[in-house]
Amino acid sequence: MITTLSLQEAQSDNPLEKILLPPTDPNAEVMEIPGYKLVYVNGACPRNYRVYKAHSMIGVIFQHIPHWSNGVDSLRYTKSIDAAVGLDDFMTMTGRLTATTEQAPTEEELLDKEFDALTSDEWERLKRYVPQAKHLIAA
Image (cartoon, rainbow, N blue to C red):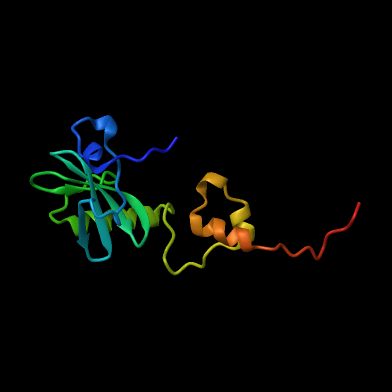
């Protein structure tokens, strides 16, 4: 069940009442770096940030006192942009992210995806999709 919390409830000290705000929320603590948005999640040391590229979350990076890290490699970065780029490169290299130059999946490919994995845009495309039944034979 999805419930909404008031701003006062979201800012309370009870971790069960905290919510993860999207980068578009005016109450979210967002750090913009070239090509990415970092949204503060929680933590003091390290501070945890969700990394967004365009409108997709690609992973999490961590701000330690002397350095940044991204959790996918054992490197320490001096700047947040370097940790975000390292995360992005790793996710793209391993195939977990697709390059932005790739074509959007066809409606037939979307039909093969799990329902929970579809985005709202993909659902909208499927609502308008009318399959072509050229090769069907009545039994």
